[in-house]
Image (cartoon, rainbow, N blue to C red; front, side):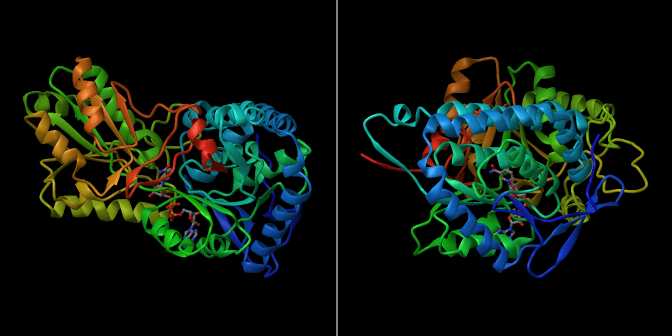
Length: 466
Ligand code: NAD
C-alpha cells in the first residue's frame, strides 16, 4: 500500500532538496519500534531558503492569481488526496500509531473536506467580509503537532492558500510522512513552485521559522508551553499569530441523561486516538445520584476495548505516539495512585513490542489533583462527582485550559444554560468529538487564541480593514 523512501529531503521551491547541514533523523513505527525512514533535519539556513521561495512565489505568482484560479488548485489537491486516501491512511497509522479505522474514516476524509471547503471560499472572500477591505498577509509559517498530522496540515494550509498566502510548514518530528506525501501531491497538482514548502525537523527548526523576519503570520498547534515561547518570540513584531494549544476538557453527565449513550460518548471522548486529542474529555463529572451506575458501566465497557496493532481494523486503541509520550503518561498514572485516587484498568494483554498503554480510569479524584488539572494526552480519565449545576460549573471552569466541553442531559434548557457558562471554545451536547470544516475551533485561556475552520478560519489569514 505504501512505498517508503529510505530517506526524505526537504520540499523547497517545488523541489526536493538535501538539508544544508546534511543532518537526518529517524522516524519509527511506534506500534513495533521498527525503523521506517530517515527524515531531513532543517536548520536556519534551510528555513531561510524555504521562506525566500515562499516570498518569491507570493510576490510573483500566487498573489497575482484570481481567487477562482487559487480555488482550482485547492480542488485539485483535495481530489488527489481523496484518490490517495488509503495510502495516506496507512502512512498516518504507520508513522503515528493511531488505529487504521480512525485514520481511514476520520483523519483523511476530514483533511480532504477541509481542502474542498476552503477551495469553495477562494473566490468568495469578499462576500465573506462584505463591506470590508481584505488583503492576504504574505508568507505564513505553520507548525503542527503529531496527534493529527495530515488533518492539522489541512487546517493550516487550506485556508492560507485560499486567502492568497504562501506557506512554509513544519510537521512534528515523529510524524512527518504524510506532510511529505502531501508535498508530492502538490507537485502532482501542478501547484506553482514555492507556494507550499515543507521543512522537517525538531523544535529548533520550528523556532527558526518563528523568528524569521520575512514571515508575516505564524500559525501554531501544539503544547501550551511551546505556544507561550512562540508568543514571546512574536512580541514586538507585526506577525499575525494564532495559537491552538492544550486542553483538559470537562465532560459532564447530568442525572437525566441517556446513560448508555453518555457512556459511549465518554469512551469516545477520552480513548479516541489513544487520548492524544487536544479536546479530549479527560475530566469526567458525573452527578452523584448516578455516579456508581455510570462508573460500573464504564468499567464493563472497558473490558471490550481492543488495544493492539493499529493496522488491525478491529483495534480501538493503537500505539502511543512515542516512547517519550508513553513515559509521560506512565508518570501521570503513578502520580494518580500517589495522589490517592482509585485506579481501574481492564485485564488485557499488550503487544510485547511497541508503545502501548491500557485504558485507565481514576475515581475518587480530588479537584486539586494533578491528574485533574494537567493535560496527560493519553488514555487516562479522571472522574469526579457533583451534586448541583453550580458546583459542576465551578469545577469545570476551574482549569487553566478552555478548549472544549461536553454536556449530557435530556433537557434542552440545561444544555443552553451550561454551554453558555462553560468557558470553552467548543461545547458538544449529547455527543463528543464532532468536527466539520464549516465549524470554527479554538480555545479560551491557556488553550490559545484565534479560530481555525469556518469563515473564522479565513480571518486568521487576511488583513481586514473596515
Ligand atoms: P509540541 O508543542 O511539543 O510540538 C508541536 C510542534 O512544535 C512540533 O512540530 C514541534 O517540533 C514544534 N516545536 C517544538 N518546540 C518549538 C519551538 N520552541 N518553537 C517552534 N516550534 C517548536 O506539541 P506536541 O507534543 O507535538 O503536540 C501535543 C500538544 O498539541 C498537546 O498539548 C495538544 O493539546 C496540542 N494540540 C492542540 C490542538 C488544538 O487545536 N488546540 C490540536 C492538536 C494538538
